Length: 358
Image 1 (cartoon, rainbow, N blue to C red):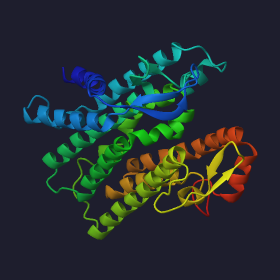
Image 2 (tube, rainbow, N blue to C red; image 1 turned 180 degrees about the vertical axis):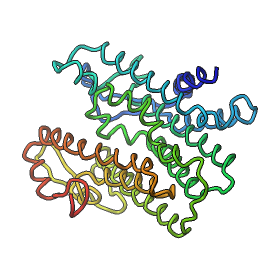
Image 3 (cartoon, helix red, strand yellow; image 1 turned 60 degrees about the vertical axis):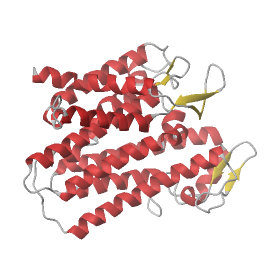
């Protein structure tokens, strides 16, 4: 019975998150992408932060009333992962097969997807908004359950482990607080909805991002110096500043081109049709936000305090592989879109991700 309940736990959680997303009222916000069918700017319902808070309160209430133990998601984590994998595979096949082929092979269509703009009921539910919301909320619930297990079962509590929980919690909250900003990022602009995005958000995102917790939740305090743990926290915050700062600067530039960001007057390159930022965060490297997210992942791996547990390094290694390939894809898209202006920009902003190195 426990195995079956563990397998269907993500299905139940995703259904509840979806219901909360549908019933919690919110305004529809315009994004960057225009509909291929109508040419109009797509609008999105962004109530993620309220759904996240409601989900946490529900999780706490179920535990307090002893209906679902706080440690349930930890204790059934492997069965939950298997269930999430099944859901991710089923969703990916469904969402790809319902749209016509792009002309590529079926496996290419399955991986990348066929449609960029998958919406239900005139945008009442947008697939990308929903996927990232479900992934973020499930990630947060997993973090809470892992923290509960550590506090209940480890006699010598590891402050670094709790710091990792706090980092991931901040990661989830700040993403959904700034949910509208992400409507202007690469994922919404360029990516299609297929296995990469669907499976990624429904299985990979909420379970793999907690990999440092999976393999250290039952371990005691490694007794690393307090100042070192604080330093890892500072590294995480520095990475967050790079990521959030660059995304906010780009968002502000797209929505209010003449407005200053952090007292910085925007400088641009323009061909009369397109404009590109060349100062502030976007003058340091072409993808400084990728560097920031990678630094956050490294800080999470370090903060756990078990440097020799190789599994904790899977998260930053994944980010490095992801962002190097994504940077190459993004450059191709930008070169095709901006032409000579992009060449002028890359001559001025030479570094792809890491200033003075790469």
